[in-house]
Image (cartoon, rainbow, N blue to C red; front, side, top):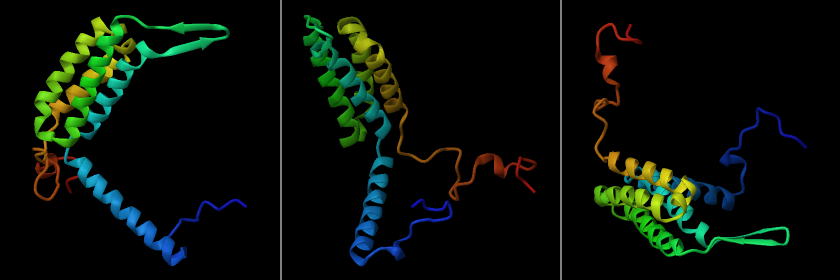
Length: 166
């Protein structure tokens, strides 16, 4: 049976136990959203993605038919070390956002070093995501935006004759 497009789920149609669970999940989602807004979350995600992209390829084994392709070189040691340090930088952004300058700078340098030492920095995916993550970490601040007033108004709405002004 297909549901019509007008149907929207509500808590009223659920049993009491399911209603309590859905309300608790909504509360946990709000807590996670508040925690995520208080730190450079996306920068940490990019740095963890970079760590995986840099550290995994030297140890991966691919099977094509009967042939086994293995990329095991001395660069695997540097890839593992750089990947681990990138993961530490990404996690430190989540745990201690006040160290974002040190973690972002270290991650940018590691991304550039990985380009030379470990399979083009995870075949360029690791280097690019590491540079994006470090740029996000360096640009992040916990202060409110300068363009927003206390009421959340944009600065151009206070200018006479601005768009949306009546």
